[in-house]
Image 1 (cartoon, rainbow, N blue to C red):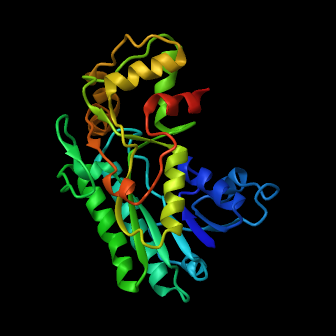
Image 2: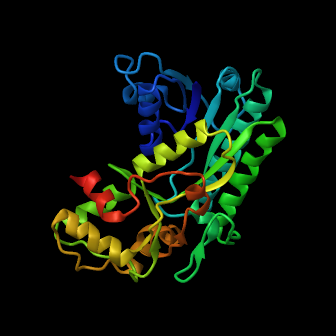
Length: 306
């Protein structure tokens, strides 16, 4: 199979490229920065990985590279948990997902032959936040900024079905691996200053990086998978439990809570990502037959941090 990937140099994308390459697939990396992509995937280690420079939100010659690919995995999007959500930043977050997906779908529609499947990222922010509700793939959307972004993102992806292409939307939880969110949580614990963020009662719906990559591979290969699937582990935890478990794995105390106002001062509106959460269950994902390697938090953290 030849697979095109956007967002390939990130935490999830780089692991996915490695797996696809090892399994003998051809990989086309669509990237804004080809120099950086060549450092992540050096030709000596990845001789058959093809790197194409693209502008995610603009039509162009890069779209021609989609023809001949059997599958597309669209992982691109501006990070939501870094920096304050100014009006300009919010527009970048939205455009990178809505317009970025629109241009991928446009490329698929024009391609001859067309890819058979698009695996498109979304996020559990779709559901809004709650300390008490439980969400699965059938739940209605929330109405905050992130929920609106996810709705627009998924609406653009859904247009690919008009071209007769199978669509799988994966609503990512917080991905745990070497990097990403976990890398930001660990330093305070190493300095004996770790603890829960905010109230500690907010839900933390997570997934181990290896499980996420396996789920993407299943979505590519399992032709009866279509529609929305929650990319979260079946056992979400509250922030207090996350902090306690992380402390145990790192052999450090979890005693110093990070007050909400400190996070709000740093991130502004973006603080919602860590101060509020949602309990999300992967109902359809389990029904698809997906088998988690890491359904529980402690073994997942042990594997990542050992």
